[in-house]
Image (cartoon, rainbow, N blue to C red; front, side, top):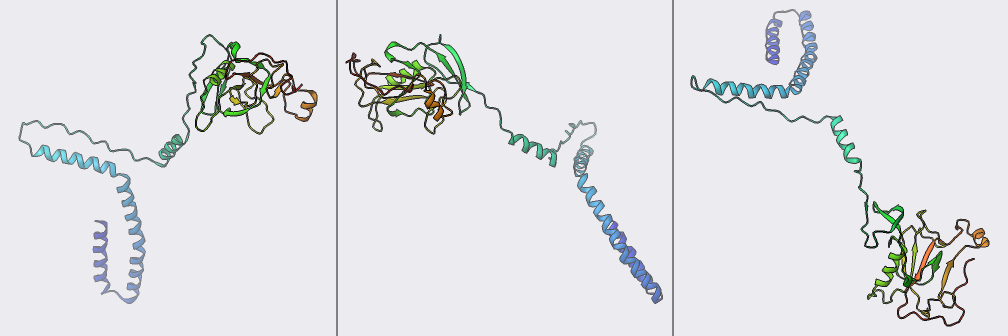
Length: 285
């Protein structure tokens, strides 16, 4: 309507301009050019108002439609009330930012303890967190005599089961894993040596480059072991046992006072008695 009115005014001025002198015509031309930005500004304001009030216009249209339907119904006949239409809210920049922020925040993972098949009466020494968001209880479970366990011991051997990430809650459970280990096509040997990390600090020191954590259970095989369980007479190869010497700790600054491992044996047959031969690697002390 504004554009039609403006065009009509300009036509009237054009017809009137034919009767004006040249000086007046120049003034009228300038005024017409000056009115164009003003009309554009009015048009922009109207467009913005239409966009901002689009929801209200839609609601008004729906209301008008309902009134028209009512006007065409018979007199005295009731017409169901028109349910107002609720338009979905257009998300603003703040809403989109809040949604993106909520999606970016990781949800907390519930830590669940690993199931344990051993003795339920065992005392819990400590609880350690694993890398897969699980927890594991380290237990003070009695070690059976046929596990031939040695506190502060670390025995040598070929690893039939890599110990990093292979967890056991107690030395007794690690011993059971050694007893139950079965050779496969990839690993043809049995398990006759087990080594377990039960240090409550969460780590067990070694001389290698790996990070050994509490619960690691190494299953090993010593092919040359004479199957003698007497540690004073066997030829078992021992890495470390007992207390580290002062000279050893001076060379290895991070070494603890005692060997942090528990080691044991699982004879593949009947355990042999002592033969009287001197055997084993010299203790670290």
